[in-house]
Length: 545
Image (cartoon, rainbow, N blue to C red; front, side, top):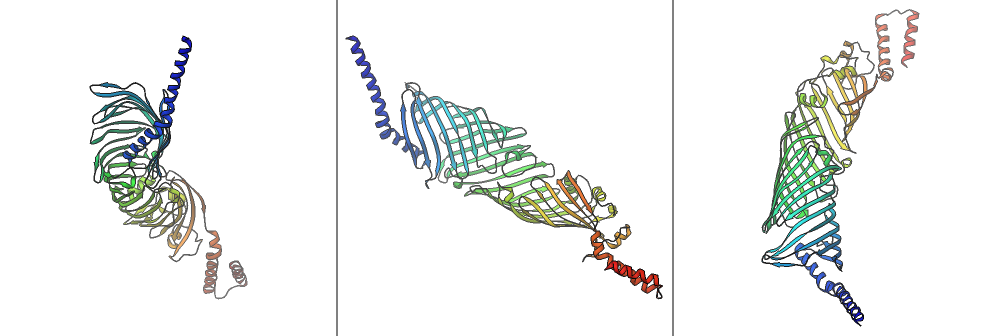
């Protein structure tokens, strides 16, 4: 009898438990908890929220499936495959308020805003304390395989894993690591918040010789939105490794960024900001920039730097650039002028020798998708003024038939075109009073150069050097002496090849004229010609024909 009573009691308890689970899952959650969660999220984010299903599991807590927050245009903004919430202890009521231990997990998290996409899995466990001014959480959040794409021009961030420890209003990272553009990076985060202000006391990323340190502060909502300021410093050794679609040579230096702005919402287009980028020196293999200043504004997704200035090769580099960071490919439009650059400094840095003097002036315009260098288009020109550049030893070895040691090149010009991932010219001209070097060719963004140069000489200078006149003079009364091809990585791995003498032109143009000149000389100087000389004249005429 007692056994039957116990069995009946156990069955009743089981049915009561099962009934409670059924009630929670099919009555309370869909009618009360799910709408309550949707309303709370919509109130917090001011965006439409949907949750496909909410399920209660005994001893595991509540799971929300397929959570989605959309923009006002019904475009997905934030989503999660599943959100798990669990209270791991009975709430405690103390003089300080209500408290308890909680556990949460978000899997399949995705935040998409314009081109920006953040994803990953997050798990946290700790304690909450309910106070009069709101709940306070403390505990540990674990990040697993988080990623971020579309932060132009930064390369993709991936594989971010580690822990963030919080205690009330303060957070600090522990062993947070990942990669940017395949380069391993160690992150450090430390922030603090109160009712009115969020302060990022430290956001640091270290990878090899690259160090980024940042501090920021954001205030509570104002009529224009959330007001914020940011100060950052970049110590760079190989910053190009962290950029996507932009080929930047190894650079070293310290850049400082200061910016302030307001954000009316989470979208980049709702952000307005103004700031300045500064650097005392940015040193590279082929050039160094000094006193770099770049004031900029950011509005409606458009980054605009209208007065970029720096000292380059003893002269001034100035220009403007505009990037639409909210469009695919990051459309870029830029124009720069180089004024009174030192020709001797440019030659020394680019080619490794000290020759001559003069001033270089140049102009370059570029437009196209920043993340696809092969699609960039542009044009420009370069000119040498007030110059006197002596031919380097390499040129003398390339054209041994002329003594170029005395040739001083006073002028140089070239028009430039950018397309198909290359910078090319068809009209390079370097000239002195007696010698010209004309060239054409192209160099890509990996600095691989391929081209052809031709050496022209005045007739008097050629005869002075004992060179046979193989070609007829052109419109500028210059003679083509030789052509030479060049191929390789600029500047230290160039190879000169295919040195040719224009004998064919000599046979077709210069030789017939020289034969006729010889015949005319014979007729003028020898009025009475013997029969054998007349036969020689006829042979020369047949060769000419």
